[in-house]
Image 1 (cartoon, rainbow, N blue to C red):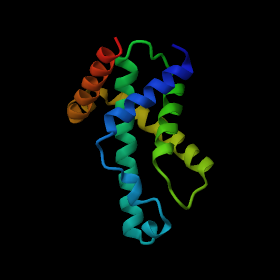
Image 2 (cartoon, helix red, strand yellow):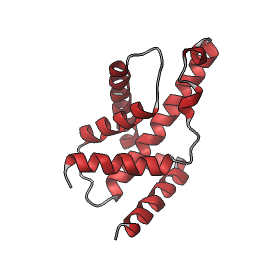
Image 3 (cartoon, rainbow, N blue to C red):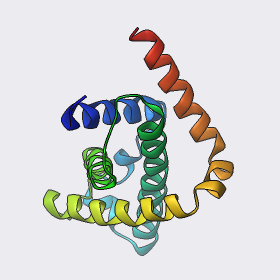
Image 4 (cartoon, rainbow, N blue to C red):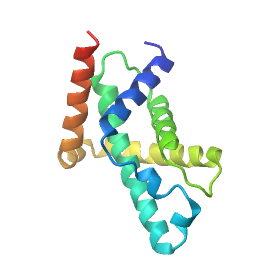
Length: 142
């Protein structure tokens, strides 16, 4: 599988895992949804939680799907791109959003790698769900 195919497969599987998660983006995609300090803090907290969960899902997908071979840098870039496609911060240009997500996911992935044993316990439901979707995707493609 080429790098591009690996990235596409990664994004597809991440999308499958989060498809039943409410679209958080709609709650923050307009300027009026960022017009108080409370809303700004809440939106940042929501984005941070979303980035953390997508990072964990991305790590599990990369480790468990045969054929997806991405370097840490490629994985981080693919996850940042996925997040940027889903999150729209209306007062930031798209290119700046992408760069912020790339930097953020790099930091998140570093922490995920360092704390993986603890994360596997704390996010067991997310990890198990991801693995079950990977297995069902693999068996349906055979």
